[in-house]
Image (tube, rainbow, N blue to C red; front, side, top):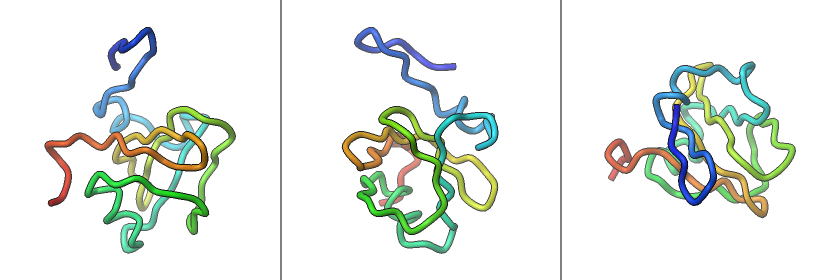
Length: 92
C-alpha cells in the first residue's frame, strides 16, 4: 500500500494503479494529448491554474488519471502538484 516516511504515509505507485478517481478524495484527470501529461510523465511539477478536470480541496495526495486510467500520484502544496511518478518510469 505504501511506506511510512518521516512519520507520514506515502502511498505506493502500485496503489495508485489499483485505484479509480471515484475511490479517492482528490484527483486530477489530465487528457492524454495535453502538454501537462507529458510534463507529468517527465517528472515535472504542474503549477496552477489547471486546464483540465480536477477535484482538489486541500493539500495532500492527488491521484493522477488519464482517459479513465490511474497512472500515479502527485502531492498538492501551495497550488502546485508535485510529481511522485516513479523515477524509473519517467520519460527522458
